[in-house]
Length: 34
Image (cartoon, rainbow, N blue to C red; front, side, top):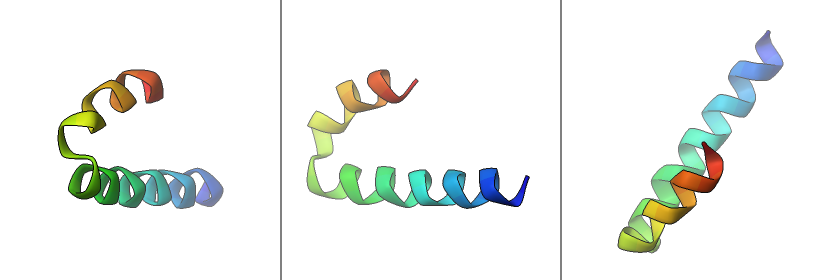
């Protein structure tokens, strides 16, 4: 399970950075992730 937590944290960080950089374009990306 620690691997999953690591990946989750990584994805969360990526989403945060993407939100800051892409902003509005991050919306469709979230759809793909889900």
